[in-house]
Length: 328
Image 1 (spheres, helix red, strand yellow):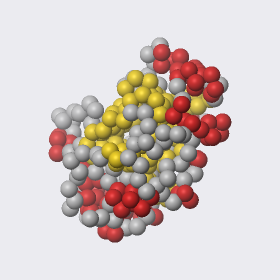
Image 2 (image 1 turned 90 degrees about the vertical axis):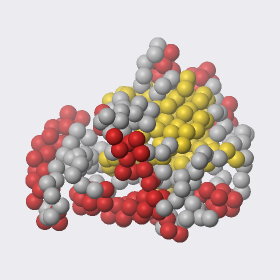
Image 3 (image 1 turned 60 degrees about the vertical axis):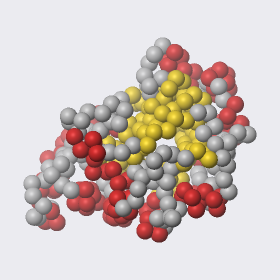
Image 4 (image 1 turned 90 degrees about the horizontal axis):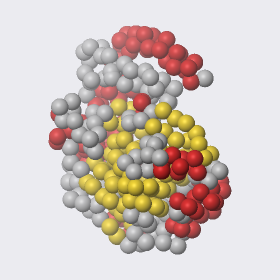
């Protein structure tokens, strides 16, 4: 099936290119060969380039081609505009457990990241260790991936025991972004900070990685809580206002990736990235990081790491408009 899809993508590149060039909506925009269009993960090898376009024009084009929705394009522009007039925090705050109202006023309403400590202290998931995962859940089959950016990843499947054995041998696959399997769900509770109707188990994801594994620089169009269960994680974050410096491309309607890497910066290829501003945070077991929708983040695992994250049901476009979320 994968071979068929790749051939389909290759055979349709000329037709899509002609469709883009002939689109009268683009008249007056100059010469356009899109930089990267990936349609719902099916055209992962499709490269057609958007370098000649500004961000707003590029999103209009992607919306027209169906890669992102028109409301998403409008929302992203609104999001970046708001943050261009706001100062990025000097650091990411670490706070103890808050009430739902306190969290909403101080962080969610104004879209600011924060590390919440002590929230998961009594959750069964915090007792997980490498040996416990092997003994209790070792036969669970999950997907692993290898590669840098999202258009270069290779995938395979293996059990948790097989994966942990591979990590011990120094293999660099990452058991990433798997829906939490049913047998493991009883160990996990939902963070008590947002409306419970926004959580769902398919949006609760399990991540297990060896030393130096991690996620490429990207942003999600959903709010996100990330809980570190085992090991340590280093995360670099940048606000939505940094988009123009990060050489972005749209993977699908809720995920934007970057050609630039904050952990391995190449300023010769990506000179605009010198202007980007970063916040760095290191997470230890029990830390719950709130990543508001639209914030770029890149993750590096230090040693063997296990994490659980919670993508929320509502996308940012369905939340209050950002001009109503400026906070104080």
